[in-house]
Image (cartoon, rainbow, N blue to C red; front, side, top):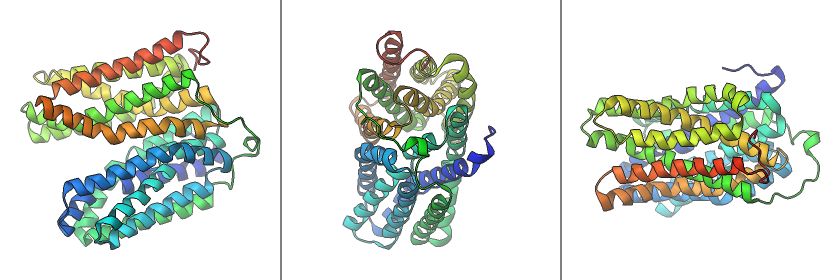
Length: 393
């Protein structure tokens, strides 16, 4: 774990804990909670899936407003409120047998996600920590929050098996209440004094639109490959245990990808390094087509995981250098809307493509092309001298 200045450790560890619990309780626990809800209430996968999709759409549409609010007010009230709202959402889900109220609970959860996930957390971090310390802090948060699925999938399973659906919802809500109280205690009331100045409202320029396009396409690629990897391997004849292991390796490789990103950032620069990572996503997607060559598939999985993990940090670094910390929340929120919309609709898109073709290869070829196109988009941006983003970004 990278060393942090002593003065920033309480803040960084609190934000890391908030991210971990929020992602775990509101995102990674959802598939397990959905299945249990279907069994308990007799609802279909379409009903539970629609509710979660609506929650993700809420995060996308609220992102710009949340970013502007964080820039103006700091994060103490908003992040704490997000954690408490997440707890209220889970308690609502625990007490309902009505589908409209179930939808309402997930809509509340969507608002909570927009206030506690990476976009909000990184905005607050940028207000409080600068320079190399911020990069180390961002790495620390992503390394810890990257374990959210590892922690909360077995935890949610144990809660469901030990106490049932209602106990699981209430227990996860209690965790969010606890981390919300800690957030209120540790975070300062507002951003630092030097940030409390009038700033020019954020207006996306042409380079920023290109950055947004590149990271949106990258999210389509990462979600699309993540959804199809296990079914692809099973369809190719891989044993279920091996397919599960290789799929798990995709997420595991993201952690060293984030660690390696920091020293490479100092040597290469954020924008050139991001170009390489996006190209790596596309090329790694192509390797997954060679299912008869397990070694190539394994290499593709590791390369893809390394790149996707590092891109979490790359987005923060590129965006901060382009827009600055004073309007980072607004810029990040503006970018988050299409990125999160892509995340919400990609499952439907790749599912339809598989339905039409009956094969995984067309979707993988399309995803590979999108990854390479996103790299080309940023490469042409880096070559232009008048775009406002230099190759040192």
